[in-house]
Length: 318
Image (cartoon, rainbow, N blue to C red; front, side):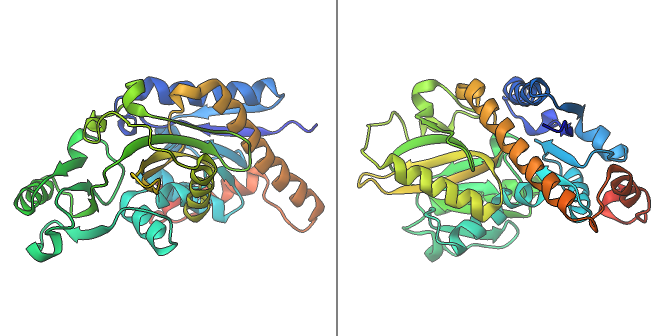
């Protein structure tokens, strides 16, 4: 088996609210799996990735910053193979995720996207969006205040005004769904899939699981849940994923959040193996394809040249 060299790019702690240790642990576990499988892993922080040319062709990453994502997108256009793809990472930001899931008929709460500086009409909110969730549209939740549960149209206006004062220009408004809250983790192309009730496991970033309360054990199709999550992953272009869904009283499943490469904290050991296998499969498939194509050149030197020769205004020259 040919030994490959990977760049592993870690997530900045800013983007791991209340999960810094868990995010670091799954990254380290995957790096260890690849190393023990006979491959080399060069680990970088997001800042190191931004300030140094990339020499490796194969990348696995938990990055989240907009600058890092833009740079990796540029590198992918020039032959870098990344898991998750920077395009998928960007697709998991709130507004893009909501739009893509709804446009592709992935079951999701009824939602609105709104400018925080614009007045929202009462008849749009009452009664269907009372109560509802307000979430910053431009990014993932970094602070507790980036996701708010509101009960009335007046409270919604007040929360949107507060978001505007914090410089958040757009929000996603999700209709609140009653039912059992489920958290899930998956790795596309493998047998790995794990779900659980976060309320019972005390697994939380901001304590918002209390809103839906203790699960009642509503019956639902486990196969349907897996198929739904894999379909969402395909739409969003991420293979290492996690998220949350609500199971309503009739067994209907709707995804309320979907993330690129979460912590996998309750199932880290099994997840690390599946993630490592998925990364290897992706890299080895691309490596074999390029070996067969004599006219294709994407070696490390050319990747570095792509970064170094970019003008100062380009995303890759960040």
